[in-house]
Image 1: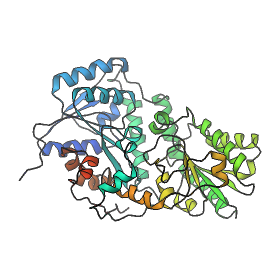
Image 2 (image 1 turned 135 degrees about the vertical axis):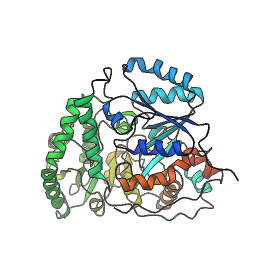
Image 3 (image 1 turned 180 degrees about the vertical axis):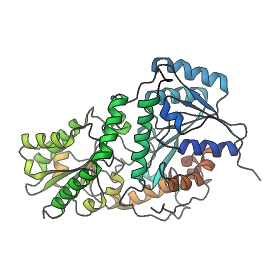
Image 4 (image 1 turned 120 degrees about the vertical axis):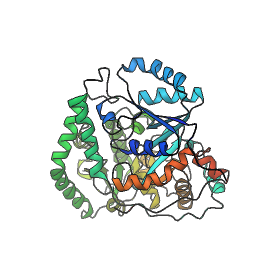
Length: 429
């Protein structure tokens, strides 16, 4: 009998999702016999880890490549664990880890969010192995699997915890970050601006909820056919690193122009903001300005966050850059057009039509192909649970440690027929 063990493994954690998930994961890995350390870059990273194995990085971003090179050379690291792989400190660490033969474990928000999270090796999103795997390859790997196709949930399960931990993280950086003199955020805004945005979002939540309900009511009772445009956060790594656009405004211009040129004149276009949109991009004003200039202001709408399922139930099609919310579109068998690199961008179920033609006569996806793709994800990289709520973390930890310690990544294990049975129960809110 071969026992699952972490003995002889040395894990190095970098930045994780806001909150205590990485701390809990590190503690469970220690119980398997592994050595666990974490490099933290600010007071927010430090707050939810504790003292054991914590190493503060107080240098500048310019010093980081040399620092991580010394770390890998001197500590005998076997595994690197991080959340997202595109921010500079992570991208550089991943590059050097590959050169040293170190296994890279990448966590991300779920491709089938919100009741799942993503665990992959080597890279995520545009760097994922899913980008190169075809539907026929996935079908072959699934021949001996009987996966229950769980319905796509209608709402996020731990949104309040997500917002709270984001607020607490930036508050600590703002108020108690003196020891980290070289810290610079990986996003364009400084810490004070980030903190103000999180605070403003908490304060404005009740008012935004009223605005959202009114806007949704107008669309649902308008009696017109409509198409959905699924927006995402402009500063999100998928948008910045894996799309042809520099700003969300560029996408808005392309989407509204394509609608104006191709959609029937009685159709409408509804932009739905990301649930975590915090106001750093003036989406509502930009949409109104562009739609007015193209003569379609009375047919274009903006909805600030909220549930997607109700809007999808009556929509004709959807467009997006590369939002993971598009998985709910495909689950319903709706036509979909994407502009960026996405793990679900497969020719079997994502339209290749020019945008005006798509709005005029969108082609439907191959629903059987998408369901096979979804089954493949549920058997490999998608784990039930969440990063932010206590219940979600417990659910996630039940499976992820065994996957991390496995000699094979989830995709290779399933393709080779050696994957362990998976738990497919959805987290109950």
